[in-house]
Length: 271
Image (cartoon, rainbow, N blue to C red):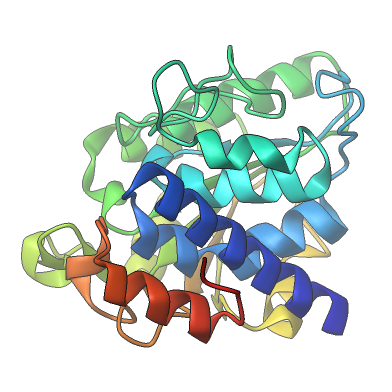
């Protein structure tokens, strides 16, 4: 467990490195999903960085593509590409643009960024797995602001209809989005009742607690022939005291003073 906590810290440090190089980025949601993405890539996902397209791999779709800082960070830490590439984030012709591009970077399963599409993509992959009699799982990470998109609920209904118990939706529920509280922008509560009403098995966890995360994700599906929804309660901007629970850090263009403070709080040497 200590190793996973250190890995999560390393991922947050990678994110700050990218923010400094790109002079900005969607930091709030990228930091809130770190423990979930750490648990997946370093303990749960069946994957091989040396063979990114291995056909029996588990699939991970980052539906909220603007959180790509978290995805780039974990793929680099896992060994899909050289960590030096992180310093090219969001620069001209970079393989690490502001939203993930599967044609540019190994390990990226789908181009995402237009919100609300990831669950449909993941559902298609899960259905293909059933048809091909494969035993891989498909994980789709969404933001709680993102699920206001109607396409999410079309995909949820279809996944239930086809009994895709190899499909797992994880909601990064930090309760904030670009302009404020999700409940004020568009209230989608109660999430548990909504997903359950669409035929999904639903479980709510602390998205920063590895014990909780493993308790939910180690024995899936929660119910045979039902897709699973994990609602992970998190803190937006987790790890940076000045950014936590502050929607203004949804996208962060740091000042020098903020960057210095971020480096200090994450135990990094500021150059």
